[in-house]
Image 1 (cartoon, rainbow, N blue to C red):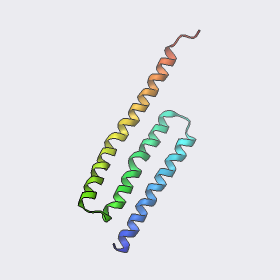
Image 2: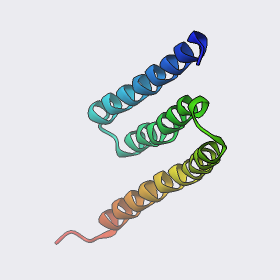
Image 3: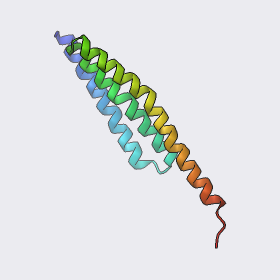
Image 4: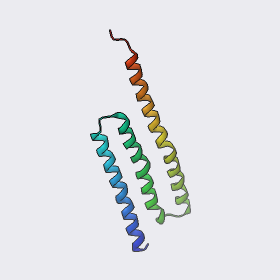
Amino acid sequence: MSIAVTVAIGLIVIAATTILTLSVIGLVRIPETYVKVHAAAKAVSLCPLLVLVAVLPGGDIGFILRAVIVGALMLLTAPVAAHAIVRLRMRQETEKAEEPEP
């Protein structure tokens, strides 16, 4: 591998680490559930994809194909999971608001 590819891979990994760190800080500091889910969904989608892109130059065709399939599945499932979590939370809040107080 050339030095340029090695530097590019390093920068991609640093970007993934930075995004993940900022997302964790957002999860800790943000009090609202819906915004927390947004921050977590971005980290779950972007960081592993960046790491997959970083490891692509070193793999054979079978590895690259598996990495692309895993990346596509992550892009499809992370937003759906975030939506399901938010929907459940909204239902819980609605049920709690509709309950009569004793």
